[in-house]
Length: 465
Length: 154
Image (cartoon, rainbow over all chains, first blue to last red; front, side, top):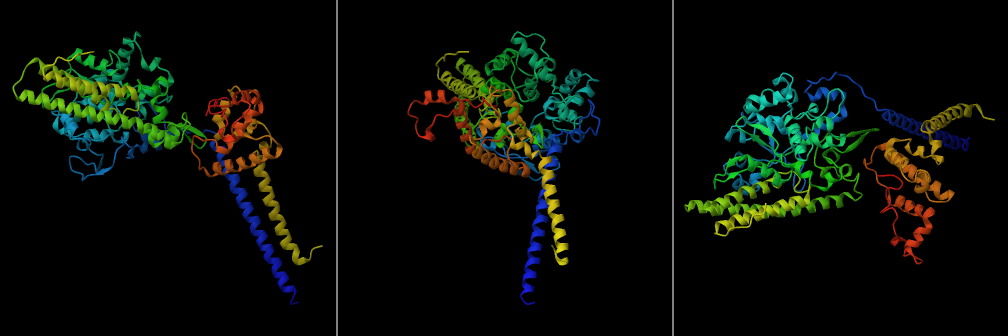
């Protein structure tokens, strides 16, 4: 009796342990089965059309019902993350009646006050902040101080809002007519007819989801560019390849532009080509100036984010790598391969953006990019110093009452130096899109500034154009 | 054979064990576990992670002469299945948990296996390149550093 009891107890303990193990094994086995089942379901590529999209559906949240994965990523462009030379920092501010924003990006003109001298007399010298994500494009344009110091035209809306349906409404179905009408409006009048920042419909056909260009200015810009290369009547929506379209939909807005004539028509200056000298030659021919420099009176130009032009000069473009390959790389959601609609710096997404082609570690790839950017940034600083010194010299000469040919030549050089420098300064890659081209442009800018200074001192500089 | 007192717990255990084995066996078949014992390249795309590599291989120069196992497992029955077991475990682990990057990279051990696999077939030419006195193993000429797309891109 006394011996049997512990033996029985041991046996039942062993039994309980065994049952527990079997229970655990079954639970693990079943959850693995569930997981495998789930993975197999993922592989089926389900698509549920829950709403009917039309060519007039602007609201991206409606598109998001059919394409929730893309929409979720699209919403993430509200992030504010820095990279070494780019990206925005979230700066808190007290909202006011006139400007309800509680967060803005850091001020670039406070970071580098030389910009205020370069842009003296132009609205950008009053307020210029680091660009934020797509989600902010409409608000940041609506509430910038630039609206208060200058009268802005409706033309801005072409690229600061989802404008496709607005074009159609204004033009009675014809986007080109709508485009003409929009350009002629005042900014706040035009602001009333748009509600969203760039949305699905600006790049996608609502029925087929195919990429398409919806900006008349880009359609015209590509037509004159191709004409300059000997291709007549180019239609970007009919003749571009699928891969080209993955650059062109971004190129609709990320390029240099100007407001032509009193009707402030948006025109991309590509009739002579995409190089900085082609663009400047176009402006010279048009006798176009953005404003008169407040310190020197020179007829100067403001370059604006020529990403499309600069990318075209780089090795990635030569290799057929387009904007979306790095800024919207493919990602996996379950078994689905989708392009990442969280448009952002590839430096924040090196695995997907770079490592698809470049078999190096993330640290190595980041170091390569930052090396290019550091070199560009150093050159940019040299060019900025040179320009500020030229402006100072012209200003002093004018104050001394000089009106001779030396001053006129120096002012012409200021126009050149300033446009070349701004072409890289305003371009959002700190040289990465085309490193050697960026260095060449900055080198020429420094040369123009110094030649302007020399001209003021009575030397006639050699001009190679 | 059993006393009455043992019969009931024994039955519970028997049913439980049977259930566990049944679930296990079903999972094994449902997940096509047996396919991993073969050399069939399609086994490697049972889960979709390797789809790009598989599609690349279908179009590659080595498609006609080598399957996944020829380049990604070492020679010899034991070494081959040990590698399969090891890789299989970690692949399943990461795929089940989802803790992996989109652009997957070969491990350094896997790279070494593949590097040696080139020499299975191309020994003569590799010897001619490396000369009669090949250097230490870690200083060996790497085939796949340059020929990285012969099996598949990416």
